[in-house]
Each structure stands twice: as structure tokens, then as C-alpha cells.
Amino acid sequence: MAKRQRQPDLFSITAGDDDEYDYFQPKDSPAPRRVPAAAPTAPAKTSAAKPQPATPADGRAATQVKPGVKAISKYRIPFGTRSHDAARQIAEAAVEAWDREHGGNRMEIPVGVVAALALWPLKGPGGPLCAEFFLQLDAKDLAQALRECWAYWWTIRPDLVHRAAPLASWLDEGLSAHDLRCIKAVARAAITHGLFDLTGTDDPYMLADFDLMSWMITSMRSGGSRKWLGEYHTPPEICELMARQTVGDCSEVKPGYSFCDPAAGTGGMLRAVVQMLRERGIDPATCRWHLCDIDPIAAAGAAVNVLLWKLGPNSTVWCGDTLVQADTERLALEEKAQIFEYREELRWKAATVAAVRQAEELLAGATRKAA
Image (cartoon, rainbow, N blue to C red; front, top):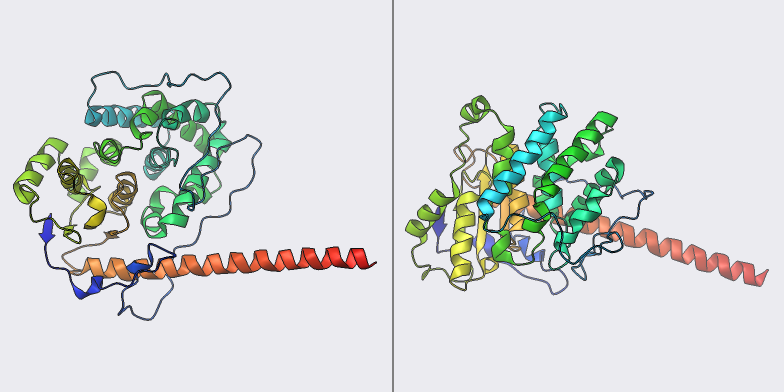
């Protein structure tokens, strides 16, 4: 983990009032080049009544649960269990369910299922009640709900969903009955072991008190795979100790302070720093965070964590080799600018289509009246 007090000129910004993310557009940005950040396919209607993620304007999500459900979900983490241990148990249960159903070696599927459930937009008092809702869905409606969750986050942070694409793109494939059964099994195992009790809170400190993505990825990978990748996720206790030695009393941390981890994995080291800042009354969203890892799955997990831990808009995630690409921050910001430009282009096209359709309806109505 590296820290820098002085900001490069890259962060000279001009923020617009209508879009809080416009200031990711560097003033000296190069000519736009298309990036493969296609918008999620518009979700198709399904037979079951599913909660619809809220629009970014109101920041809330609606949900429906079975009539008579009590205010507290029965799928809770045992009292006294640490968040780290709860996350590990949830990951182990999900991986065990995947293996029991003979899910195969596509680790991005079970990791992606748990990631989308953890990111479900409804947080707060009703968050844990999502457990009952998801458990009543059949496998096809569950897959559709996961698509809608990724689509919701794409409208808000398309750059991070682009980076998390390995965990979401499989939903656009033709899923077989076996695939759907495995997805359902993973979701049920994670939910019944307290996933929504862990991730349903709206308290940023509690959401960043664990690294669920790290446990999921390490549980799915064999020891040989981790050795070949050089991937060893640092235990949370060690991360916290190293963070305290590196950052100290946080007295130097001011708005705009930059933190960078060139071999971040899923972001465990920076998570410890985030918690230190919050313990001292410093909002991590006022700082700049840059995470990079050579492994696409780990980088995807880091992107999920940036959303879950609420690191704010001043955050970037890159996948690459920092020994080859020294300035990954600039690369990430340039890519981010292009992705947000692409999102705005799609919004403009959608608004144009809606306006044309409305005009056609008005013209047709006027024609009928005249006739």
C-alpha cells in the first residue's frame, strides 16, 4: 500500500452540478476511444413479482416479501460471531453448495452470485428481510434479479461494473437447467447462513468490517492455483496491524489524500485503512482510492468491495501488472472518462427514443380526434 499527500495534475477537475461523477473526466483526457463497456441488457419481465432496484435519483430500492413476515429475518448470524468469521462461513457454505451440485471450475459464477446478492440495493431496516424474498424465487427469476442488480449499479458506477464484468457477464449466456440449479443452491446456502444479515445494513462501518469477496475467491481456488498466481490474501488482523503502522494516527489525512495499493487483491489492506479513518471521524469518500491487481477475478472482487464499502466516487480499480504499467491511476481515470461518456451517450439515445415515441402517440391521438 502506498500513500501520497500531493495530488497529480490528473486530478484537476471541474465538477458539474447535474452529475457528481463528471469530475472523473480529466481536463487533458485523450481523444475518446470505445471501451467494451456495453450496458446491461434491459431486464425482461418475468412471471414472479420481483423487487425493482431504485433509480439513482432517489437512491432507494423497493422489495416485496411474503405476507406475515416478521420484522426480523430468521436467517441471522449467531450472536457474538465476528464479521470476518461470518463472511468466511458464508463463503464456505456457498462454495460447498457449488461443489455439491457439481458446478464445475467456473469460479466467476458462484462468486458473482454472492457479489450481486451482497450488492442488492435495499439496505437498512428492511435489508435482512430480502432473505425471505430471494428464497421464494425460482432459479430463473433469481438469475433475472441478479441481472437487475448489476444493471442498477451500472447506471451509477459503470466503471466499477465494467471492472466487475467477469462476475456478471455469465448471466447473459444461455444458462442451462444445471447452471440454474447450481446458482440457486449457492444463493440459498449464502442466504441461509446470514448473508443479508451481514450485508443488509446501511452502516458504512459495518459494511466495511469484512471482505466477503476475499473469502469467496480463496475458497474457490485451489492451493496450486493460488501459488501459481502468487495470490495470498493477507488475513484481516495483519492488514489492520500494517494499516496502523503505515497511516499512524491519520493526522496527515486531509480531503483529497490519495491511497494506492498496486497489488490490492480484493482490497483487504485498504479496507483496514478505511476503517481506521472512520474510527477517527474521517469520511473515506473525501479521499482518493486506487486499487490494482493483475488477476481479473481479484480486481472484479475489489470493484465489488469499493461499492459495498462505500468508498465514494473518488475511487478507481484497474486490472494490470504494475511492474509493466507504472501509471495505472492515469489509465484507470482515462478508461473511466470513456465509460461515463458512453453511459451518457446511451442515456441521450434512450431519452431521444422516448421523446419520439411520445410525439408519435400525441400525433396519433390528434389524428384520431380529427377523424
